[in-house]
Image (cartoon, rainbow, N blue to C red; front, side):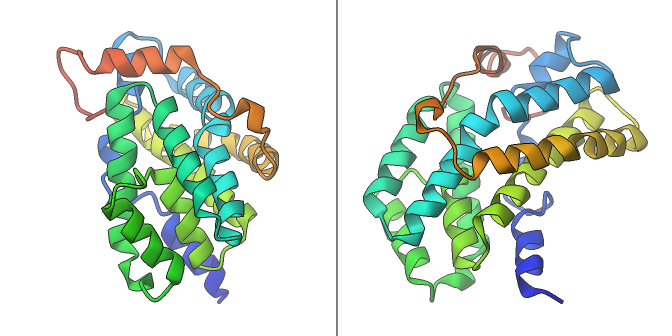
Length: 228
């Protein structure tokens, strides 16, 4: 068995106990407003979230940080982490990203013998880094000796399956519908991974206003199942 494959499966496992299941990233607002209401609208929502938001934000930050950590360029990593923090406008999304990053580190504490993991711990503890999830994911993926393409594939898959699971629970959808959505998303994920290998720096943090507004509205929903 390829150890790199096992490491990738572990890192990108949607069931990792970091609390991702408690965040919908604004999806709950779309469902309550009856915008996302069936398999077709759920697929469209996830496609747009991946191709209009994540590709320019978390996936791009991951890509740039992965390249930076290969050169142990912590100044660039700190700058990217600060930029990531500034572009996450909804407060719940910003806080959730930091919490997910911190919990991800706790799971991979066994990598403490890795110099970069030690530095990551220190910089978050000294508050030089916020420790956003995509930043931490990139550094841990590198420590696990994964390639950038593998890390990006796992990251997109994790995001796609998390959104699909949330759609199944919130709309609700049948489990078969959820699996059909994931199958239909696979060609898009391959395309986005290729695009994220060398992202355009000028598009880093490109804002998707609709997603941000729904995430902000989520903070004031009368009833909520998710934290964000």
